[in-house]
Length: 224
Image (cartoon, rainbow, N blue to C red; front, side, top):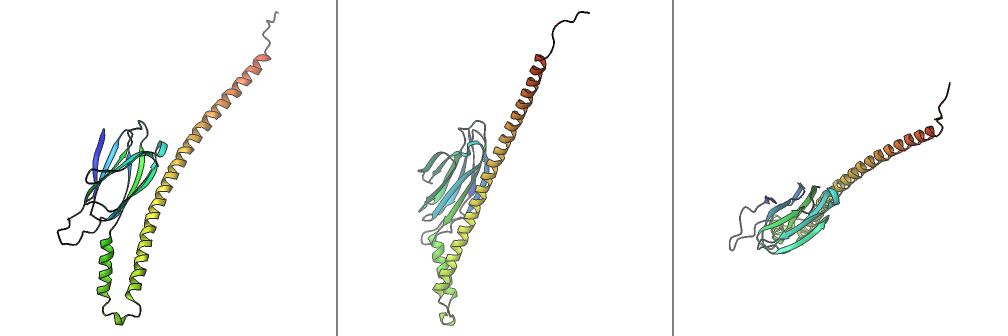
């Protein structure tokens, strides 16, 4: 049975003819539980001529795998993966409309999955607007000792590195959560089988004592 579809983020307005393109949606990070035998779909609005990067990881659940699909606003299937633990996919340029991301756990009848995914947007329009804003704020240029292009380049480099650092931190948190869940699952298995082995050892020791004792028992009848 298909699960209810959830909306993540939508565009407030679309570009009019001759108007500037709307800014891309903010980056999104989502962690959710995908029940056994269920399929969850998410919709994400995107502007045209931008770049969208979708990354997902299964950080909890038996097998650490899930089916993933990504469809364009026109209904074209862009990505279809089966029983994967993680994946990174980039759509460039994007179509204006709602992209559909689906996670399917219908192949599992017992184990639920904990899934993390992240959507990262980038637009060339933002860079152009930022450059124009810097040029307007730099007038008059003869009052500055450093070229405005150097300042703009340095700030853009710093901004891109900071954004990449934030993305890497989110991925590291996802890896840490997956490893922690895996370790806790392994610890539970080790404790269970250790208890089973201990029980077997106690039972075997009891049987050995009983058998040895029975060998030395004198079963002959004593007449008085």
